[in-house]
Image 1: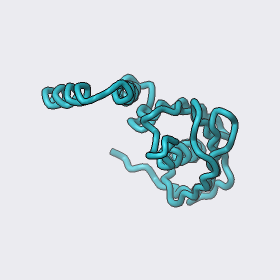
Image 2: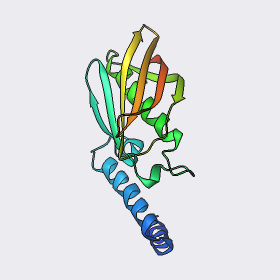
Image 3: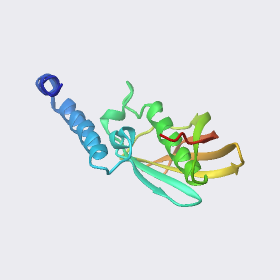
Image 4: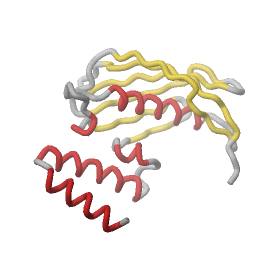
Length: 163
């Protein structure tokens, strides 16, 4: 396995130009973020998420890199959706009692402007907390302050499985 990984990495490096090498460096640094414990999941690590959380809001910042680009050279909507879902889900889980978790049941997103600039900033807040569902909303802003997406999300409250 390790030999195959070294071979794959060597092949990627040999096929890469400067832009591809920079993207590869960003991806590997993201994996390292997860492995070192800086981020809790690979997605958090790969997106280089900086997360701040309190009882009212969850805020996430991510740098905009070429790795996030779609074919138009702007942030792919799927990455924006991931940041929105992560911020709302993180806050939903924070608000639940021990032994319970929130999982996304519905996610609505309005894309309003292209994701360009240096970073994206997402802020999620609570709309409703019930026994079986939690409803939140979140916005994503680019570095010039323009809102690029607005979202609402519903989350089922489930009992955590004991392992």
